[in-house]
Length: 420
Image (tube, rainbow, N blue to C red; front, top):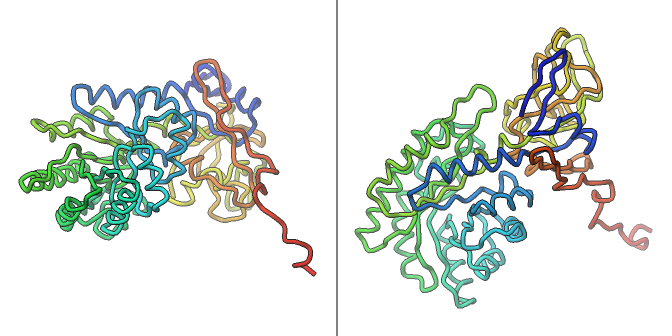
């Protein structure tokens, strides 16, 4: 993102102005920077150089095929939570041997498909899942590689909706019970134990909770080794935060330097499942102001993007930076609530923002690449936005804007005789 300050402020993404992109692709629209996406992933690779590792991009953060394609070409693995995500990775050219399958509700159909293509590992989250996977693998005559996702009961100091490592979480197996699960897994003929896994949450801005969780994993790993269960990898999950407002998360290199200190003298492969820290600041949501409204209490800027396009502010009360794309820097600023067209009072992108805004202006929401389009919906029968990838001075439409026909595709009216 670049800014040119004259009488007006102009925002650019790589070599193209946002104004030009909005005219070409309309609004609301997601735009991704190819250069930022690449540099974020390469930062992980560089920091882990010299240590055995597998960087598995968390597909749930952003599952656009072009984004997965770029990462696959860079050598990324992928962390998936559904068979739909699995098929997306395969279409994008991802290597099945670099796929870890997470998620608490894997079905036998999903397990079968993943086994047939030979994924790297299943992250097991319950004893019942372990037994079902063994049966599916037995039916196929295959070995199912597994790691056990343990819940280390560590507070990640983040929003409760994205905190997954506490004892009361639905995710993972209590670390005090994990040892028993490993011994049960060892007795199953179609299970191959390869690792241990945890993921304590998302948007984590402090290193210490992650290191604390890793230390718990290492203790369990060594205990299992003394009992004849040797693990090939330690999967620390993802969750490294990014800056949305005033957060000060560690850099990727600082984070990994701390992690690698814990691996001194160890031989296990380090597996990571980053999502937000790779794609968040590579994405922008562009929206246009439709109307200005004042009710003697507040100023509203009513825009064409709503909570169906970007759910994070409504769901997590998330603060995201919003800037005017072409604003008159000399015009007085006012406080605005930036709200969308969805019929919900929680439909807002930002509250109490001091800005200079006119009807027709373009606004840019920053760091919108993670959990933006991926969480979008057709609520209020609104077509989902277009997605565009910018590379240098070229732009590529990587997902067409949905049209009205897309909204009813697959639906059927009842036959006339039912209605009589």
